[in-house]
Amino acid sequence: MLRPKAFIFDLNGTMINDMEYHNAAWYAILNDDLKAGLTKEEVKRQMYGKNEELLDRVFGKGRFSQQERDGITRKKELSYQAAFRPYLQLIAGLPSFLEKADQHHIRMAIGSAAITFNIDFVLDNLNIRHYFGAIVSADDVTISKPHPETFLKAAEILGVAPDACFVFEDAPKGVEAALNAGMSCVVLTTMHEKEEFSQYPNVLRYIADYTDPSLDELYT
Image 1: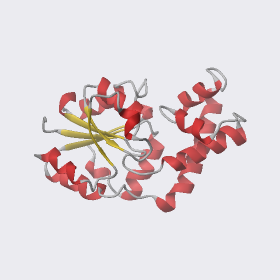
Image 2 (image 1 turned 90 degrees about the horizontal axis):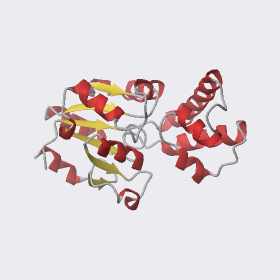
Image 3 (image 1 turned 135 degrees about the vertical axis):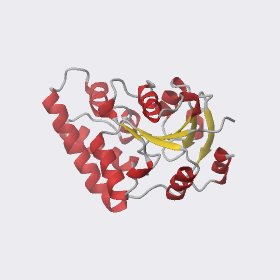
Image 4 (image 1 turned 135 degrees about the horizontal axis):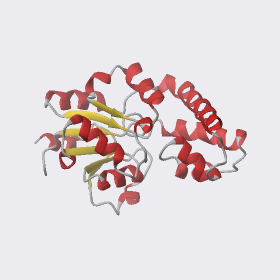
């Protein structure tokens, strides 16, 4: 296995275990405010990519003006942050994993479909911004995952070839984006079962959290 020169982390469900809070916030907005009539499982299936893309998938393109989209997004993110703030912490083992990667001179980036507002919420409240040489958010790309733009842009900023980057992801669309970028992937099973990733040949291993001892192999 090629020794990685860079780690690129998705954020939600990969660094913090917050996807249920996003699901709850979207469920309330979509059903209470927008009357979409979706089940919680249907909402979960729509939760990938940019917020405006989610709205397009559920309601069709052109349903909302940009001003309306922005208002929906802001309300949803404020609701999510208020609910999750008391529980904000890194997934088990990640603090020491970041420190070890830093000691081994592995460059690190965040490549997420989250907006900058939510990435800042995590990085600044947990004081971990200093680990990351690149941060690519939904605001920085034209096309969301599974398109590879997010991860390729992170690699470019870090100055590392794609095949020397290992991606940490929790969602099938994210693993597909890593595959499209020519990157290997470690999957966090926080929100999806192993079987949901069976079609992706770039998965190196599955972990429940960063205390998994198999991660030591990434440094050797």
